[in-house]
Length: 125
Image (tube, rainbow, N blue to C red; front, side, top):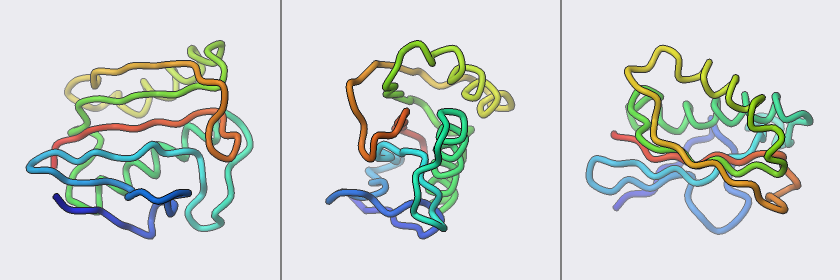
């Protein structure tokens, strides 16, 4: 087991790793829409979602992986009414991948830093 750390994605907001590699899989901790350069949470749902995917891509790139190797995502939404908006951004992110990853989406009452969305994923290294 090996922890992954990159300054191209936000530092964790708690005592956990950005990601952990076990054999040929990388487990990414939940990402919220923090800009790694400023350390600030972006304002809108759309901005946060776009930044989350940039953060995920940065962590995957650090270990030589990519969005094309993501096998499972879990999305946590503060308001399930935003499901359609998130789907549009999600589809655009994965549109050139061989398959869409398996996925779960759940509504939650609150997220760290009062984010609108959090996404975690599992990918092949």
